Length: 209
Image 1 (tube, one colour):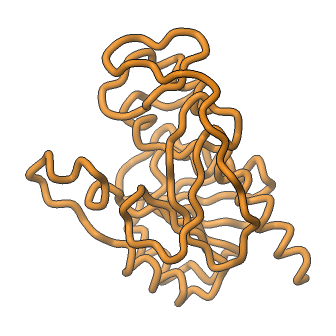
Image 2 (image 1 turned 30 degrees about the vertical axis):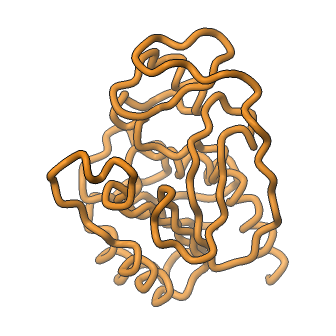
């Protein structure tokens, strides 16, 4: 099965889908030399989806989140708000889709995932809108305390992987991501999230075949 990974970044989402069994093509307007998917294409994500989205079995999209995040008012830069445009493009492609973004984003009936659901040492709360039904999941509370921002984390602590965090190797392990730079890691989706989605999606697709 082939999955299109739009606004792909360095490939946190892609790696999870690959673990689930998809062949993943990533598209991003910026170069991504450390992209972890099977194939990378530098292009405008929505333009590529309009031309080629119908060629894939499923589509994942992570449109820019800065315009929806709680910290958006701390910076004067304008950020693109592309969720509605992305949704329209995915619906036009006619394939099962997943849209990922941060709390506060205008997703429709989103599923909320956090790291404690998957045994990760970061909560990393993210919202996912899907075109298919999902089972109910209850998020367990963190099993340990969070490390204080600005100091290296201690063994067993949960970490906030945002901004200029400390302890990059610890944070890579906490996220289940080993190949990213600090900036890439701060924006990444833990692969465990999309591996879960990918396995559910494959089950549903195989059930329809």
